Length: 66
Image (cartoon, rainbow, N blue to C red; front, top):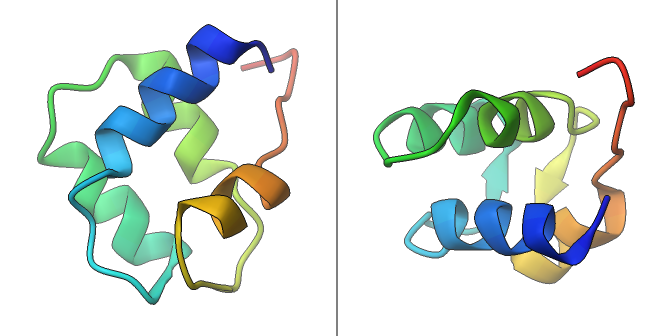
């Protein structure tokens, strides 16, 4: 994932309430002005609890098929 993609994910989730699980983050992202690629990256997060944006960044997997 390049820095522009991460910047879009971070901007989309900046106002999310943490801790949050993946579905919470997906639901939040859907309420934001995010493009399909950003939504797909967030939906591809592993199932788990995220304490903050650093957790999201550390666990985000960029899938070339997305």
